[in-house]
Amino acid sequence: MSKALTTERVSAFREAIQAGIDGFVRAGEIYVEAIDEDPKAADEFREKFADTIPVAMWGKFEALGRKWMHPKLLMGGVTSGKKQTIIKRLPYSLQERVFERERFPLLLDGGDTLEVDVIEATDAQAEQLFDGSAVRSLSAQRAYMEARKAAGGESFESLPYVVSGGKIRFRRNCEMSRAEIKRLLSEM
Image 1 (spheres, rainbow, N blue to C red):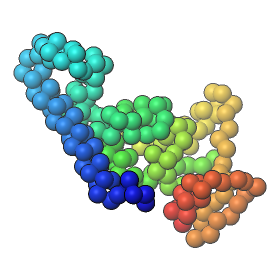
Image 2 (image 1 turned 135 degrees about the vertical axis):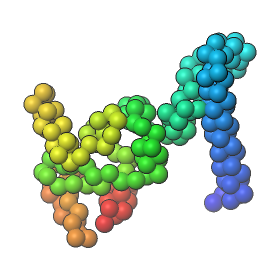
Image 3 (image 1 turned 90 degrees about the vertical axis):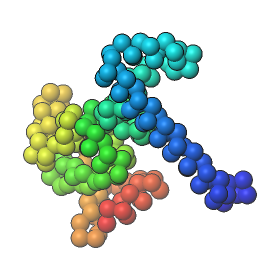
């Protein structure tokens, strides 16, 4: 670790970020309390904070305050805009499971399953896993895959390897990044 990036600075930065996130959540709760009492309060908030808060942010404050949107989605939370949209549509309890890095069973084209972390999953994998409000069962994933194939002739590429019994069997030649190897080892 460099001199500039000390443990104390990292810790202080983490605390400041968390305080900011907690502040946004509390602001959302206050906003929701006010608009539940009087829906016209929304206009008053927008007017009083027009110089500070963009109009598009008010919907996010309400979503945070009503626990429709996980606070980690406020700052992005995921690498892909499409995946972020998929996660936003989920119930809050499922959003929490995603951000706690729970692994969900993903059906592969050959019938094998893979436990995936949605944050690390591809957009297509996230679409296959979630139907908009819940986690798809393996049979629902199979139906989804078959419907996609029938609609567009799309084939789902199976992974170039299978993890089974603590061993890796490669199906074909492949090239893997360091991150993919780390993920692969975590599955074992």
